[in-house]
Image (tube, rainbow, N blue to C red; front, side):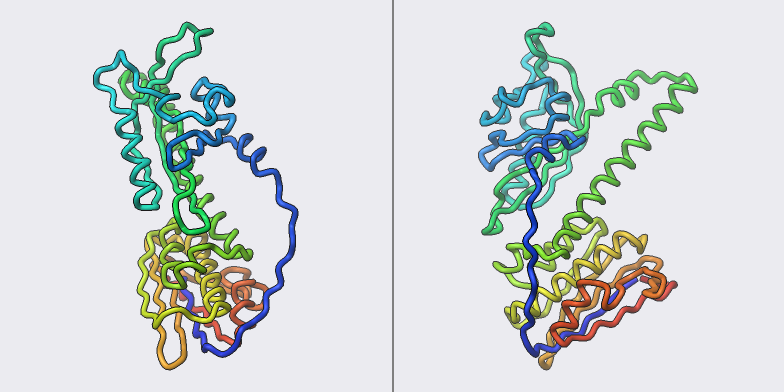
Amino acid sequence: MGSGYCIPLMREASTVEQDRQAPDFQALFEAAPGSYLVLDPGLRVVAVSDAYLRASMTERAAILGRGLFEVFPDNPADPETAGVRNLSASLQRVIRDGVTDAMPVQKYDIRKPESEGGGFEERFWSPVNSPVFGPGAEVAYIIHRVEDVTEFVHLKEAGNTQHQLARELRSRADAMEAEVLQRTREVALAELRALVRGINPPVLAERGLGDAVRALALDCPVVTTVEIDLPGRLPAPVEAAVYFAVAEALINVAKHADARGAHVRAVHSAGTLRIEVSDDGAGGADPADGTGLRGPDDESVNRLVRNQSCARICAPTSSG
């Protein structure tokens, strides 16, 4: 499926914002089913989910405000451990480059409470570290998300050839892989969908349409390339309308196209800005059947209409 937008630069349009009472995000975060830890750029713990506390055998009051590696040091009894070194390198990449860093499975033992005999317990983790940007597009926080895969690793190392165990192991491995992929997809789509609902991201205001579209491409679950040829900053309503239209198009690509790759092209010529979003998926979007952009019912297209723009949707079934 693919879509294209022709945007004559004509006039500004007014937008209507609705005040909504914000939910208690701290309570929601702490009760989230995943194991999450939030760090500041100094790698101090600023928030932690209940699931993470259970997995790491820690208590919230004992770790908040402390350095990550003060709370979780290497196991001194394991001379080959590289947990602190590998995790530190990943976190520094996130801070330096502002990108998500998915780590391979790590052996990172954790300290047991004194009430359980103290010492360290062997653990294996699948970590992903993601940046959270501040108002100036700087990395303000890092979300450290982990999956405890110790049981899976132990089963694999045991090499038990019994048919039932092998079948359960394969089933668990497939389920874990599917869960990780699905969670990553859902998070990325939720972030994009939130933007489409009217949250104006700092990267659009600070860096303009080109960098904002590149940021959307990086967040898209489908590998997306970008081709930008713009003369500079465009009127704010036009940039906003195009940004949300591209975001919605990429959501449709990720959700419906079954595509391996997508491409966004933005070219300005003779007072007209042309935006094309294409992919290599199956295509076949039909607004009459409720697939693809739905014209006046779709907020992203409404923004284009309010800016006296045109939008053309093309999704042949033979290509994206």
